[in-house]
Length: 153
Length: 90
Length: 121
Image 1: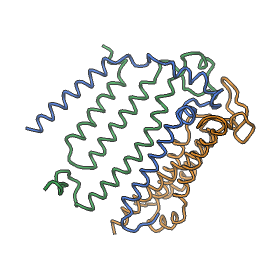
Image 2 (image 1 turned 90 degrees about the horizontal axis):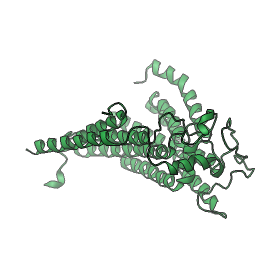
Image 3 (image 1 turned 120 degrees about the vertical axis):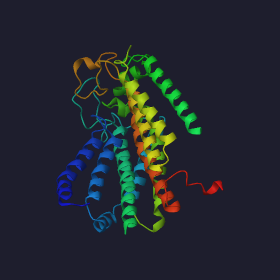
Image 4 (image 1 turned 180 degrees about the vertical axis):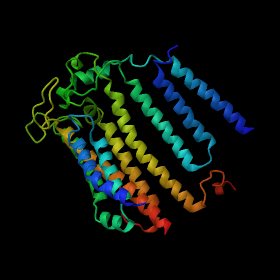
């Protein structure tokens, strides 16, 4: 399956796909996209990397990848960001917005060019959920790939 | 015999679906949009995001997203459990 | 009649019919999973089509055109949020179903639903 054409295409395309996915995750509160979509894009880039390499190479590449840790950090971080709203307000209240913290800049009302330093908890939740979706989908693809290759032997 | 009965039921159901698709309100003219108008008008001051869909997913309907994250986690755990029987480590 | 105006809903109905036919009359487990996926795509398409408003803009304020900020000039955002949730869940559930199909093939040596009947006696 791993011909020279696939390997060369992957070498050219995979960095672009990964960077595009990270852009979608980071700009989730400004442009179309968000954590789920960006995580799926990053996972598809990693799937391209998985498919284009030999079985042994994939195993040694992803042996140390902290996928389950990333998934747990994403879930707990999402929950924790939601719990932040309990400090005086309700669950999932956007407390960081307009507070001056990171991602807490003043949000203009109406049509604006879009400033990255706004969004409050939404930006954090986008990042955490993107991490979680990325790790989950990549581990699904990885375990299917490893199982099917083991079965062929 | 059972197959013929199944095909009859399937054709009746398809007829019902097509009738419903013809009789539903015209495409592109929603009837109730008070809730969505509220979301569109107040998303920037309440959720402080330009993207109204993201502000609904993570702010107004945050519990929905929380349950969805749980479902994703459970599904991934189930896949890993179902396929891990041969000692493959991830 | 309104065949042209309601074209997306008719497509949804046909997709649902194809999915139910696949689930009901096919015997291969993989094909049944494909049928469930077709139904899921039909439901997602139905949700997005319900929220569409004729001549309206995307519900995003970043660099939107001037008239998008007026009343009733943006597409309904709630069905889009629901669809977004549904897509990710669909991917995860499909992976789970395929994993069970792999396990069943290992255990029984076949994917035909008529032969996977050991409990029936």
